[in-house]
Amino acid sequence: MKPRIQMIPERGECIFRCAAEQRALLDRMLYKRYPDAEWGTFFRFGYRVTPWGVLVTLVDLLPPDRGDFDEKSHVMEFTPRYIGRGLRSFDQCAFGLGFIHSHPEGCAPGPSLSDDDMDRYFAEEFEKFSGGRPYISLISSRDEEGRRRFSGRCFHQGQWLPVTKWVTLGKDLIRREYDFRKPAPRVSNGSSTERAIELFGDDGSVRLKNSTVAIIGCSGLGSPAGHILSRAGISEFILVDPGLFKDSNHERNHASRASDLEVIGLSKVELLERLIHEVNPDAKVTCIKGDILDPATVDALVRCDLILGCTDSVYARAALGDLSTHYIIPVIDMAVQMGAKDGRLTDQVGEIARYLPGLPCPWCRNRVSAAAIRAELATDEERAQANRAAAAAIERGDDGAQYWIGERPKELTVGYMTTAVAAIGAGYAQGWLTGTSEMPHDRFQFDLGRRFFGFVPDNREPEPDCSCQRCSGFADQGQTDFTVSRPF
Ligand SMILES: [Zn+2]
Ligand SMILES: [Zn+2]
Image 1 (cartoon, helix red, strand yellow):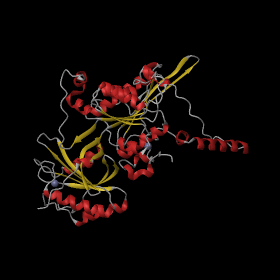
Image 2 (cartoon, rainbow, N blue to C red):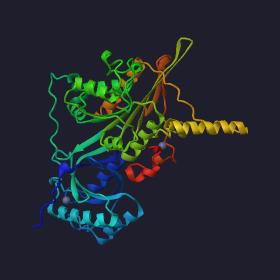
Image 3 (cartoon, rainbow, N blue to C red):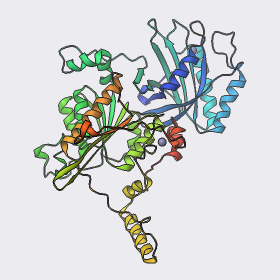
Image 4 (cartoon, protein in one colour):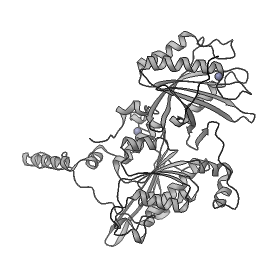
């Protein structure tokens, strides 16, 4: 007898992600012969190989045609024709090819001996034909109460990695299923989150506890957001900010103390990490004192259940849109704008938007522009060069504006506005992670100083020609479609 396939979790894990519409399609197909017999399909996926393992994102299904399986058999008997169709997809695109099948009623989702044979065969064939792309095999079944169970494994470079998490990204819930993992212990009454349990329910509290949230930008918006979410019981954070704490941040930053003033070299991420650990010493916090475009940052972000955009830079906003589209990650993006004239506040504007495949991206919403990104990412040398070109153009009598890269205006915001917007955004994050509430609009603005808070919803449709509409789940294989990339 051949040995069973052994997985080596220490070598890493695999996370599988899909959009809710794809999941509904999959479920209808997988259970079409339920409860007596199995059914399955090849699917194409984007992927990213990271130090923690492999992220796999569903692109589309390659459903079997009539005659692709022996329909009289209760298990999946492949025909060479269907396997040939799968292999041909390697020539047509850069995506990986996986297989998912259901088990009949009453059967666990664990792989059978014949599943081992099938997976070994596909892993080797696909690796050979695809030049080393990973292979993933998923099995789905239902338990006595009709709940979906699954198991999965991913073959990459000679190793089998367990699929530890299956995330289905819906508008109302970020649904996460774990492979054979024991659920986190229930939080008991009388605990620090008792009130939250009453509101969100037991399941909601467990979901919050199991969540990993990334915070991009750890000052005015990011520090109150991290503060609120750590008190809410979220147990893992990825903090991203390249910046150092400046005394002028103190008015807005919830993580800084008087003793931090005039200390040189404190990073914003370490201050927020300290605050989170003061609230919850058991929280797992990864600090990345780097940029959202750094490959190491992306490696960490694609593991998260949700990303909070707490930065006012335009290129970071564009990068958040790319991450959401390509890696099927939910993003809640926040912004604050304030203005004053003659000692009176004219604007106290807060804005919250969310990104997920199917919704308009920041480009569809006109929230970013190529010129602004170019200006932000320009090096000092490029800036000087552009301004010399602009001066030369003006001298020739041409319009110099097309060359000019000016300084970015300083964003003027104060603590009550950043805290208010961060709190609202953190609240929507909790609602999305637990499925208990939804944003009233996918983007809206309000102005504290106006009647009815000057509420303006933005319910536009995505631009049909925008790359976000065709790159869902493309992951690294769609890299040429990223709208912003690291300057070198
Ligand atoms: Zn099976
Ligand atoms: Zn778009």
